[in-house]
Length: 104
Image 1: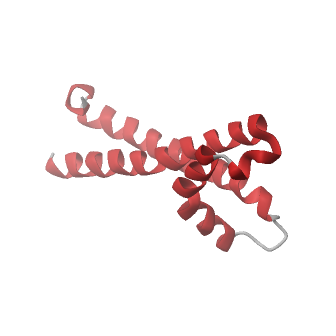
Image 2: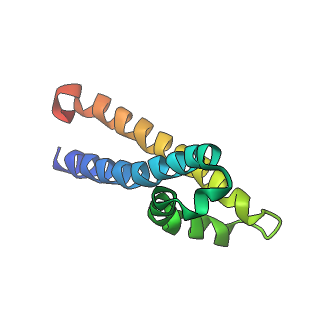
């Protein structure tokens, strides 16, 4: 039973770690559309870039050189989204095995 709670805590932390860059990349995409060419001078755009930078750099190192630099944030968003979905499904599965009332 204690191992289940440890795994649940780990999944909660992992979900939180993935949620931050996911929202940062989504906000960056919205500002990309709304701010236009002046987005690089926008404070909030730069802040969102800073929040998602560790994940973006990792994806840049993992992707081939054929992937253009301006496409890396899009690839990062979808990879983080997939990872977030996997963690969420694992958390749901664990909660169903432990009992839903224990997952609150």
